[in-house]
Amino acid sequence: MATTTDVSNQIIQALADYLKRDAASIEPTHHLREDLGLDSMAVIEMLYRIEEVFNLQIPDQDLVGLTTVGQVIDYVQGRVAPASAKTAAKPPTKTSTKTAAKAATKKPAAKPSPKSKKA
Amino acid sequence: MSTRVVITGLGVVSPIGIGVPQFWKAALEGRSGISAIPSFDPFPLEGYRSRIAGRIVDFSPDQYLPAGQGDRVDRYAQFALVAAKEALADADFKMDREDPHRVGVIVGAGMGGMVMGEREITQLYEQKRPHRVHPNFIPVITLNSASGIVAMAYGAKGPNLTISTACSSSAHALGQAMHAIRAGTADAVIVVGADASITPLVFAGFCSLRALSTKYNDAPEKASRPFDRGRDGFVMGEGAGALILESLAHATKRKARMYAEVAGYAATSEAHHMVIPREDGEEVATTMRLALKDAGVTPAQVDYINAHATSTTVGDAVEVKAIRLVFKSRADKLAVNATKSLVGHTLGAAGSLAGVVSALTLTSGQVHPTLNLDDPDPACALAGLSKEQQTRKAKVALINAFGFGSNNAAVVLKAITS
Image 1 (tube, chains in turn yellow, green):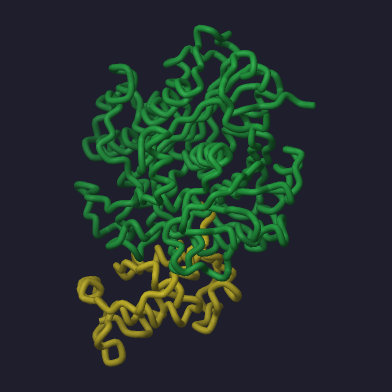
Image 2 (tube, rainbow over the protein chains, first blue to last red):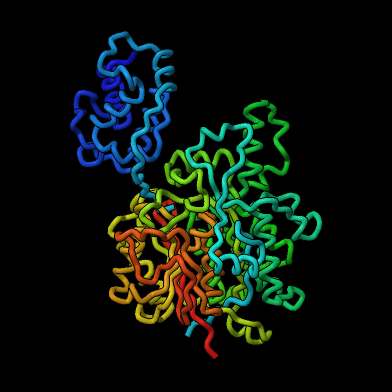
């Protein structure tokens, strides 16, 4: 089972790779837009990577609640291990992560999604 | 005084009707063309966040075209052929009475021949047999296949161009056709906008871009809701619109019926972001101002706006912000509607459908409803938006069209006054 630290490290590393900067310079309190300079399209690209890492599909409605690094970590943690996020201590394996992701059914209440395209 | 340009014929292929009379009746009645996508076989529909679209169901080109004419082109070009045929007949435009080199074709297309394109790419990568790629693959996916086939169908040998600026493609086609006639390089131009790419890959791409509505998969007709508080992205559509543009002198000489004058046009780039508009609306406002200036009209003379209005949260709000910048207190006196509420976003066809709708609005005095405007969003409220049909003796219409690539267009139509 993935621990909070594992999820946190993987997300921060994914962000660091995307932004081409040192992972140590990214804090959970950082605002994706204001502190890290991600526009809405960049957030979508970054979440696309995170969906791949954790084998998730993030519904559009959930994007509105993902504005800081910490919120992304909490959200992914909740989706990867919804019932046992706080108590999990086993080392993460690819299989367990996938199983947990498939089992995850918790969906936050629908909110307006941050659609910003010109289209 | 530059050469004046008029619209003498219209054609439509749309999710709410093939043919202008069917389309316009459905538009005024406020019928939705949005429905559930039954399948992307063999791809699981659950993998698509959005599962609805403005589809043209049971389209058969042979029902509308001479046998074989549409056989060797993709679906979007078949739509283009059908719309062009109707527009030419509507204009009573006979090529045998024209100098063929004075008749151009300008097509706006955003995606092009993706039906065959996706099929051939898939087969190549799955079967790894390069010698089995279809010989017609390149001619079909080349983005000017529609402008080519329309010219061939009618022997139009004048300027033959394709404009691809995503969602604003055919608004630019209208504007560039006006320029060609003003410049004296053509007497008439067959203008078409067409797209048909509700295909597994393109649709998945728009899903991944998170540009599409995903909240209304179980109520498709509710999904395209420009300016409403509940909007959550656009609904992809498909179709084609066609307009015959002629110089006023040419149309007068052949005693053609005229719908409207294409009086002004502006093309700008926000030079800002591939898919995100500038949120202050300044660039959109500038585009509208330039088009009005080109038409020689002031904001106070405009009566009606066919809004770009795709039903995205930010896009609709930016457009209204820009309308308020240009029109100030007059903004709430304008009749405004969103054609995409009826048919979804037909991408490259959208500007041409807006052109057809605006021409019909000027001639009929009828403004089609904006569907699903149940709870108008205060961030983009305009008094002249309504989910009911409106009557407005409009003399000047403005068409907005914005596209990915930071692209803006605006076109001004004027009513024909005797």
